[in-house]
Length: 220
Length: 299
Image 1 (cartoon, rainbow over the protein chains, first blue to last red):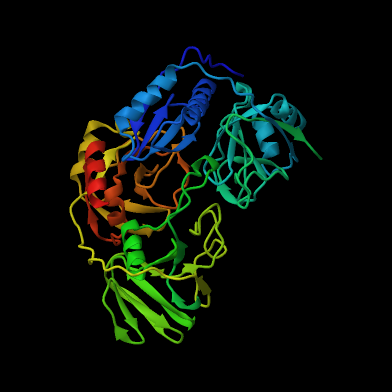
Image 2: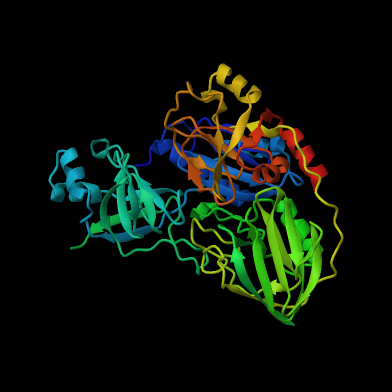
């Protein structure tokens, strides 16, 4: 799964995002190497203790860095980031989470059929290998996990589900997502889990971190 | 010291806000906070606010009654019409109110958002370090929802000495922005039209975003590709699939995959939030250095 060699850093682009943030982007399409590069940089930035950084947000293929302009300028910060891009990564041992899913979502039969599989085979293939949490985004605690093998890649639905409940397990674009709050979605709903990633009263408010590994298992 | 306020009338999207819950984008949570931060701060200075939270109300205004206790209230933001027990007051301004007093705020000459701040602090739980309401994520404030008539707010503690503030001078001129993370996805022609055309604020606006009417069809021919989502910040100008520009505001979704042509500078975002539907708006690009200079001089 790790196609990214941290000794040969991927080319990054450092762009201003408004007057108080930089975006460091590792690609314009989602692939494993770009996502890993973003996670590695976010870790290094968190460990580097650069004065003036207010927030570090790893995403699918980029890292947002919010800064206090009265403490550090964008050029100096971009320079510090460039130095970290060249540094060697400290390997992080990713925690593994087991998540039980009831694969009885309203779209699971259609998804399996579109992939040329029976539902049981689809579930087997879906759960065959652990997935990485690529990022948290879109809504509180909503995690994107991936990437699935090429043969399991399916576009989103053509219509939107107006509301799916927390715990819904979604599938599209080579990824599986876990819903943590009630949301509308254009993804295929393939199942339900009792797992709740978002707990507003807890600190931190979400359990899963980008880079963590997820082992999905099927429960009746 | 404690006091109790009852909401007698509330326009849509009246919410509790404070400085916001920053630093939680990594959990998929946007910061929220006041749409017009400088007016929120001015109302706080007028009230001698000892705590961070206040009430953000919308164009229709708000009526409140003091049910118990004595407290100072400060108000600011846009230009509303205000009276206390039927007696007209200055806007912005402040007054000490006692049990039985009624304060009524009705629509005024300009602006979308006004603020009521209090000497004592609002007795509401902190959710992830903040009392700000995110109606989108249903967090904070009063049960994560907008305030409605009949809600009672408890206030505790002692206010600080109130400060005098100057009335906000209404600024005009183009809204300034920094070219966005996807600016180069737009042709030179579209970029040029974007900075020369006149747009209009649409009625489709809320705390998540303000849609802009593209009367001159600047983005009509822009072919919009689907992009990988990146984190969003308030002020990002996204161009939706049908060519509609939308400026993302305080309750923005944390990530987005529509192309962003620009990001409005911090010093101009309060002003944009106060522009009413139908008002014309033009956009002008500036450098990051200039935007930061403006931020320092406005602070």
